[in-house]
Length: 147
Ligand code: HEC
Image (cartoon, helix red, strand yellow):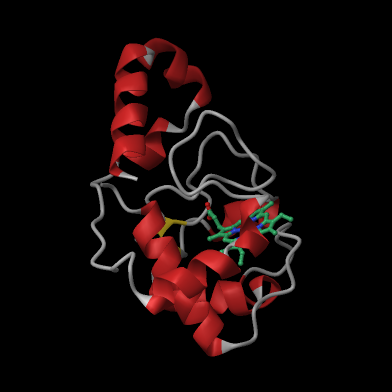
């Protein structure tokens, strides 16, 4: 994973001008977060399997390609609706000033997105099992952190 990050970094430096158009720089410009989650832990591995549910719609590392959902790089501590390349729903845009994605808020979002921001357009019912959500959050924290 370290290698992938370095590769991305060098590509970014090499094509900074092109990236400025396509990549949401504001998201990546914030102070890099660190994660203490062990990738060898059972929780991380469980989270990785559970993340299959989200993978079609979200990337966790900076990317030039936007999926169906916003890029989640540097997610922990990020304000809602902060990927400038993504066309958010009016509902999530309206929540942007009041909502920060910390663990507690993400736990609620993953449990039932519609309960956190009614009218948001993430087509996902939610994960009801708290242990599944905890594993997903551990995986998300590790994978969205700067390396
Ligand atoms: C069918 C596609 C889809 C799936 C599956 C999906 N999402 Fe999303 N997600 C979206 C869309 C679209 C949005 C933006 C919603 C809006 O603008 O109202 C979003 C928004 C988010 C946000 C807020 C991001 C921000 O910038 O504020 C988070 C966090 C998130 N999703 C996490 C997840 C996780 C974790 C999973 C799996 C458990 C998941 N999503 C599954 C499409 C999806």
